[in-house]
Length: 212
Image (cartoon, rainbow, N blue to C red; front, side):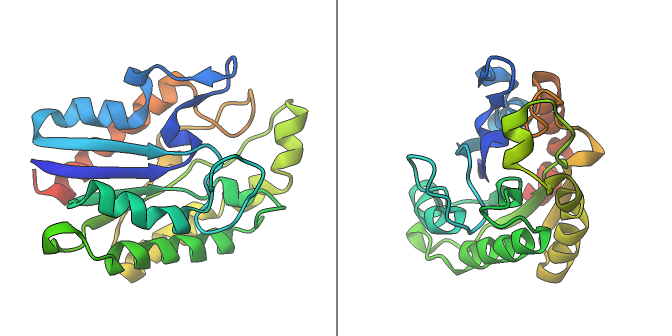
């Protein structure tokens, strides 16, 4: 049986802009991916609201720096066959980074961590699948619009930058924007239909990377 770690932010946690609330367990994309893979794999969801690739944001109660928290997740859930990295949206906050190139460099740091970690039982490093989050969109929500000011343009660059990074580092790549769009309720998150669609769309490439 294969083991897959889904490492991400609120898109992986399942933040629902309606309410706001949390999507039902069955609607979150890692759960949909688990259902699609069945007994051939265990899919572990490791999502945290506000998580960045590699930048500090002290506004939340938990450490949001993805690079700092990643080693613990890798070792505690290891050995692993595949790590799916879906991060970069929160890097678009101007008080965090605000630049797509910063998210690319942060993602490169995460790749280095995945490949440089000493895994339990001497297991080799897992494969890596980089998923570019869908770009931010216009919203009438004043708080989210201000929080991600300038982020629509920058987030639109992530897929191209992440695709190039995946080629350079021999990682898998998937552009979430090819399947889903962010909800205009806050311009950041996915509605239930979109998060289910993302989980289903990831199944073929995950199967290929796992050799299933």
